[in-house]
Image 1 (cartoon, rainbow, N blue to C red):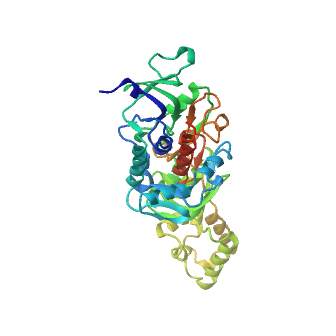
Image 2: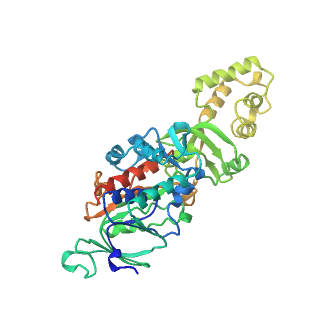
Image 3: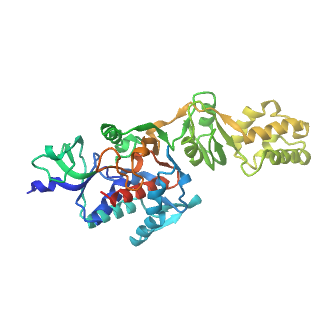
Length: 414
């Protein structure tokens, strides 16, 4: 039979994702009585689907520059106190096999389940209670004079839910963002922040593919499934990674990275020859003109780019010279073509939005949180960690590292 005191906890964490489970296990290790509440039917869904089911758990090269925030210095404290090496040490302690991919990205060899099971094992060791299918309907603060007779004298928060009423001294919001709503994400964490007087900075989908509604959409449909290594840039950022054409637009690591910086109305520019500058590419084209005067430009480019892409480029960039032998194309035209191949520019109509976004940009304003403890400056005992905070990592394991670091930071003080 459940005793009433089981509804009283030192710490209640809303959200059983990466940051929530991390915070729970470390708070539990400090001897705190911890309850984790999650509205979905199972915990850690985003962990399980990340990295194609292999979980890009962290990165070997974590720097503040890998994070986007209204206050770029906010993340430094937490990241310094729980580093990628700390997380790797835990992974190795559990003998989870992992490997490095390009750019220092670390993935599980077998399954993302290994990471989730590790976090759950850490929680179990610390006697953390976890409840799923729990919808929190109301959160109230308890002032000394108004303390509920059933609550502990140290309780600051009263939570009403479909599973009953809970009391806690510390309340941690680890609800994530709006990305991939099919995994159960909602704006609940932002609503809680606003309830306690916090500013929520404008939200938008991040690490998300671009879409097009103009004539270029037909081009991406025809090229769907083709990937090229190039550099993609917006007005303020550039990334050199794979660029993938899809039936909706452009995806791939480079596009996802740029989407964090792109603003509606801006163009994106693709450099199909990122290892050469314009003059080098123009020089190569003129060399080909000398060496293969009877060849067509498309034939010479087949060695360097996928054939179907070359045919699309021909229609878009040099249609008037499509059937002109290289020897007959003026050098000035080759200079122009070199420039266009390095600066292939298009204006997206938008992105695929939260449906496929990996993260949510914006969130709880860090100016109103302690960078040391993650505690609210407006409400004692209230903490915000992970994606709900205005800190967004680049693609490559950085968002998980922020989850681990922010969860660990709060756990030392809850």
